[in-house]
Image 1 (cartoon, rainbow, N blue to C red):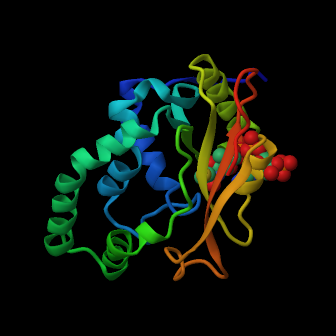
Image 2: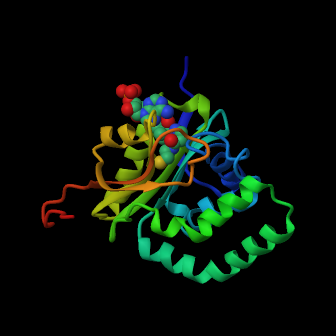
Length: 225
Ligand SMILES: CC(C)(COP(=O)(O)OP(=O)(O)OC[C@H]1O[C@@H](n2cnc3c(N)ncnc32)[C@H](O)[C@@H]1OP(=O)(O)O)[C@@H](O)C(=O)NCCC(=O)NCCS
């Protein structure tokens, strides 16, 4: 059978698909809807910087013309941080208005309170001066080495830009396989913090984990943490 799945650069026309997949995989690979009912807000939070400001660092998985997964990349963390400070007040206003008037259910309101008041102290450290990525595939497209190819493709992209390396943040919990996925690609654990965002939905401890991969370059000093 001819393999029709391919990895290509993100294009503007993919935006709705990427936003949809961000929601369909938002709860550790499962749909976010039972936990958070505002897909628009969820997709904004997860994808806007990458799709609007740094689309050149984004890639999609396409099968027969349909987008089935993505990798959203950021080469310079400071750009993302600048973006967040620029939109923070507008985003906050939107969230508060919706919290008060959009008729959200209890779970949605609880998650918003968590994000606004607790999450700051519950996130594994980011890695300064390193690029980072977010990756998600639709259900039928997992365990077929597509994720591996997407990340390797991103590494090639980063190396051409002389990046020092790359990090990714993921969730660690009993039964989670994403840490292994990154380990297989040569990532190592950089930081791990116990978090409570999914306490009502997952059994056992859940961790925010940041994982790092340093690229080998001849003239650079070794990374220490
Ligand atoms: C995590 C994810 C990107 C991995 O991509 P993938 O194409 O499924 O993974 P690959 O086939 O390239 O590699 C599989 C390896 O990664 C690990 N792995 C991670 N998640 C896995 C999953 N859901 N299914 C199977 N293997 C997984 C295993 O170690 C596996 O190795 P093995 O086959 O020897 O056991 C993809 O499964 C996914 O999108 N999952 C749901 C959402 C998610 O967890 N995203 C990560 C957020 S940081």
